Image 1 (cartoon, one colour):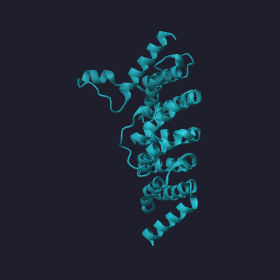
Image 2 (cartoon, helix red, strand yellow):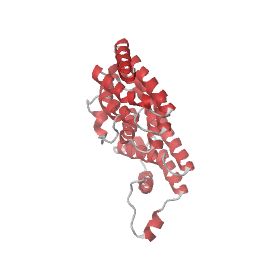
Image 3 (spheres, helix red, strand yellow):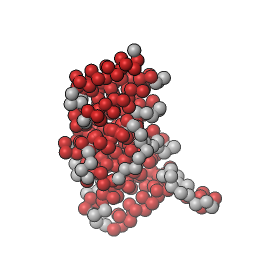
Amino acid sequence: MNMATIEKLIKAFEGLKVFQPNAQVAEDPKKKDQNVPTKKDKILHCNVVADSMCSPNMRTIADFPKFLGIAMEAFLNLCDDPEADVRMVADECLNRTIKVLLETNLGRLQVELYKELKKNGPSRSLRAALWRFADMCHLIRPQKCRPYIVNLLPVFRSMYLNFFSVLIYSHIPYIVNLLPCVARICRREEEAVQETLSTAMPKICSALMPFANDTEVKALLQSFLPNLRSSSAVCRRMSASSLALICQHSRAPLSFFNYLIGVLLGKYS
């Protein structure tokens, strides 16, 4: 691997780090003006990172997983950039990177997208991660589905917990980790987020709900119920369709449909 290529990548990362919303900027006004990146800079660095991540030679270095994690975070941050052109390039770079690395680095890609769901951050970044993660749900290995359920259920409910990148290498179930994320996301008020969640839920439910236990299914149902009273028609439709999908793809559909009908009759009759 050419060291010049790695140095170029690291410089691009350093540049993109300046563009992150939470990055600290020097207090000196002169330095602050010097550190303000241009749209051209952002686009250039974004493409350099994507080109490096897609290079076959780059994948042979030991730190490639670390670089990939930084790249995914940078792309997702730039998906919320004020400049439309920058957002478009970041979206294209994200798609290109995922397409090239899907077969060889699926687990790492899923973890990085999941981390963005866990953040429950800006609408554009969240939506960019959500629909892509949903598209990859069917590729999750069966032995990893339980861990995602455990972690994703809370994320859809609360979305402010920290996520550790070692998740994919541990035995913590996907179900356990992912369903909480879904419960948090469904509480977002932005209609754009609700629409993306509505599109994502059929894919997420078909892949993961068969691995959820009764307690987890009921908890997820309870998370979506309040949205039925929302003033937003988009939110109400999303909640209604999601409730049906959760029951449909559970291990005991008839039992949970009966449970849901009972809850609805008790609450809204």
